[in-house]
Image (tube, rainbow over all chains, first blue to last red; front, side, top):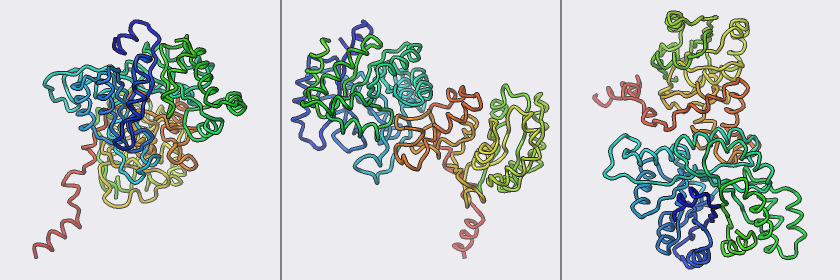
Amino acid sequence: MSLREKLKSGKFVVTAEIGPAKGVDIHEFNENAELLKGRIDAVNCTDQQSAVMRLGSLVACHLLKQKGIEPVFQMTCRDRNRIALQSDLLSAYVMGVENVLCLTGDYVTLGDHPDAKPVFDLDSVSLLYAARQLEQGKDLAGKELKGTPKFFLGACVTPGADPVEPQLIKMERKVKAGAQFFQTQAIYEPKTFEAFMKEAKKFGVPVLVGIVVLRSAAMAKFMNKNVAGIHVPDELIDEMDKADNKLQKGIEIAARLINEMKSMCQGTHVMAIGLESKVPAILDATKL
Amino acid sequence: MIISELKPFPEILGYLDGDKKVFIVGCKGCAQVCQTGDEPQVLEMKQKLEEEGKTITGYCVIDFLCDKALVKTRLFPHEDEIDAADSLLVMTCGIGVQATAAVVNKLVHPAANTINVGGASGEWRGSERCRECGDCVLDLTGGICPLTACTKWLINGPCGGTKNGKCEVEPDVRDCGWHLIYERLKKLGRLDKMQTMPIVKNYAKMQPPKHLRSTIMWALEQQETKV
């Protein structure tokens, strides 16, 4: 069953992400993919995340497909203009990649090529709109296509943003533009997420709650200081700090958060960031 | 000098949909030369809007609308007229619209598109910046330009990198442009505007047409090459 069908069936969906290699050695990518196979419903391939130049996400999706894993093609608008983005959407469809997560993308100065010229010709909303246009047999210029693609379009939202209202306004724009599912930024406070879902429910699209696995108290503090929209509460930082086995504690917290929030949404998106091999352990701990 | 041209009248009328009373602001700087915001254009606009059933509570033509301090002092005697208006129509470049927005607590609508900077970007500008996109959206953003206030030039709302009202690219010094827009529209009770942005921006309008690239200096250069 595809991600679309699974979400439609009402199943609680689990997705994870793998970052393609910085270079051409894909051993680790393949190993992680094998570990996730059969355990999760789809795997996101990140698009040069944090503006760091890497192997492309579309090729990574292709590799996953070859292994029989359902990929989610992440696309950002930082590096390509509307011509290249639309072309890559067509390529994805021809390669059998249906799920596309449409993102604006991190700014270039946050990555490893700070001197690059950023593009942002389109953004998350207009990319969704462009994909929708292609599905209707026309490109953004209104020119007709030979054969029409079909996508399952995803988008991102930050439930922990303060204030959250601009996020909800943009979420509505994304739904109107074509978003069919959401994978959220990481959230560590079930109460905040519950309040967010109360508002977001009205859009009628499935939401997969984002989980970033904690590795240490320092990592949590770093995210609090530097990553927009993420807030790890002091109790969790304390818990990580006191734990002898940080890895085990991180897994335990991730599983607990999923258990606490699973009744509020339609799935979870686990961002392990380097701990991809531990995702099965998290799922074991949640009994999903 | 900043070159602007008046938007089509139906577009301006569209901005004023729902607003019965309007105060008009004109500019004697570049907008005088471009004939977009001097007294004759302001009076013509006043008449056309009155014919459409609008009440013009007053108008004011200011020397340089890019100069916020000047705008504030010149608008001061018109305080009652501005208070009586639902919104302001500003007949000048994007800098002037933003400078006006910064000193009044009303929604401002741009009457012109800024199509080319034929020199300095506003003679007296402060923090306001204009990208000369040729398709002014300041009506929808509370008079704050998303193309210059947002690091990524986003037109569809804030990205995930907004934190405590700051942009994650330069969190210590740079405000999130969309946070400013959100706060302004919220204050004006017009958050509905955030749902009405054009989804895709037409960047072709950023290319100045040939007749604008052909400045007087350009014409002189052509003469010199002929000799």
